[in-house]
Amino acid sequence: MAMVGLLYVGAVLFLNGLMLLGYVEARSAGPLNIFVGLLQVVTPSYLIFTAGGDADVILSASGLYLFGFTYLYVAFNVLGGFDGTGLGYFSLFVAICALVYAGLNFGRLDDSAFGVIWLCWAFLWLLFFLVLGLGREELTRYTGAVAAIQGWLTGVIPAFLLMTGKWADNVGLATVVLAVAAVVLFGGLYPRLREHETPAAETAGSTR
Image 1 (tube, rainbow, N blue to C red):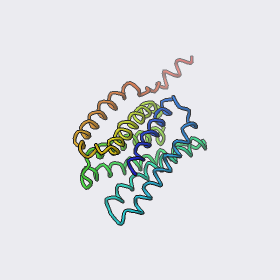
Image 2: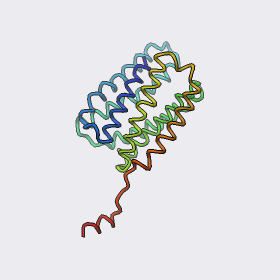
Image 3: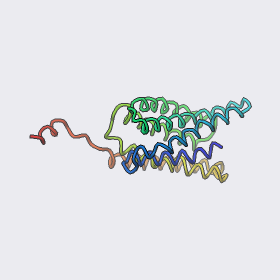
Image 4: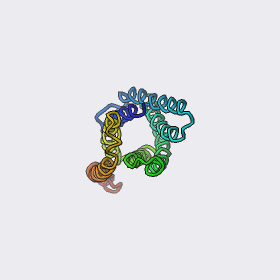
């Protein structure tokens, strides 16, 4: 059930990335954020209620709420016209929790590939914090590109591998591919998409 949710997490990350890149109008992204947000609240609730006290199942399901609440928050912001700072600081909370989930996947849950995926999500939600919480607008397009790519890299592709039973047999390979792709893609995009701020003195001089 969670793997189906992961597929649509990929979809909404892709859409939200395109929104930050300026290709999708903000309000038009609201409905999908609501749909996926609700899915990522209902799914972990069901998994926890039917876990029979299995601590690992409950632990794995608990992280899904971070996504559900994020996407619902995005929907309320874009449809209601609310300020984004609250979502930004919630994203900081998500980024910190994602680091914990990454460590748990590397250790207790013995899934190094999802450990890398959680690290990718920690990086993305940190970018959301910088853009929305701290107002680092020069990072907006870079953050959009990272979100759009992560939609496929950490959502859609792993979901299909899980749903077709190919994930367990390729965890080691997936770990290496994810780690290398993340470093190369996200590192390479930064100098290209980071918008440089215009110095105040230069701006003032240009108006004279």
